[in-house]
Structure formats: C-alpha cells, structure tokens
Length: 173
Image 1 (cartoon, helix red, strand yellow):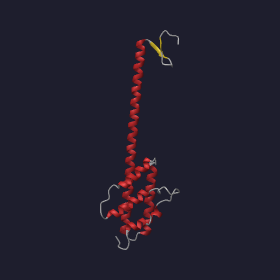
Image 2: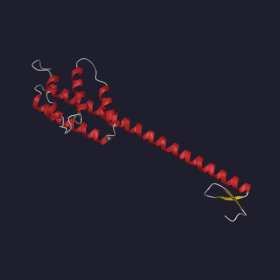
Image 3: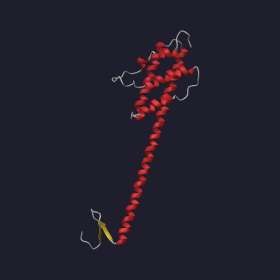
Image 4: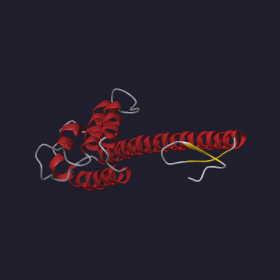
C-alpha cells in the first residue's frame, strides 16, 4: 500500500458517492451493510484472512426478517458493488490498492449472496415442512371422517343434521 494515504480512510470518504440517499433520515441507505463490510474487510486484510463477516450476516438477516425481498437485497449489493468500483477508479492512487478493493468488494458481495441464498433455502424448507404438516392433518381428518361414516353405518344412522343430532334410517328429517 502507498504510505501517502490510508486506503480504508480513502474508501470511507466515498460513502456518500457510493450509497444512495434516503428520504427518511432515520433509515440507513440501501446497501450500507455491504459498504461497511468492505471497509471492515479492507482494514482486516492486512491482519487476518477475511471470513464470513458476522455483522454483514446479521444486517442482511435483519433486513430479511423485516420482510425485505431477497431480490432487493441482492440488487442493493450489486448497486453498491458497481458504484464502489467506479468511485475507486477515480480516487485510489495505487493500482494494487484498486485490485485489493475490487477483490474485497467481490468477496463481500459473494458473502452477502450466500447469506441471502441460505436464508431462502431455509425459508423454503420451513414452508415445505409446513405444507407437509398441513397435508398430514388433512389426511388424519379424512381418516377420522371415514371412520365416523363407518360407525354411523354400523349404528344404522343415515346422516347427521346441522344441529349435530343423528337421524336414523326411518326418521323423516
């Protein structure tokens, strides 16, 4: 890295260029979790091997929990990726640093996509399990109704009136 500037500080200065503005000041801009994860990864690049960023995982999980669609989260990540690489070309002096930013940004966006994919698969398996439980309940109910019809036939009951009383074969109801 070039000693004249700190790459993380340089990238942090690009926050307003990279992130889309929001109307509500209480909300964070879309994709802020991606940008922050890139900054953390750039800072940690020298010290450790970047793995799954838990803050990124939690932020994406929180957005999904609030009902945001997976496609919107991925679109935000793609937009931050594109804007960050364009802004990086304008600001970063050293080509090695520019490659580092591109590599780290790619890793972060891929990690975000993995989190979204894992959540979608998990949600799909939960929905499938719920459908299977519902099918089982319907099957059990059908079996109970079938046994009830058999019991009515054994007792000589033709039907059940709306008020719940059994009508015998000879009744005129």
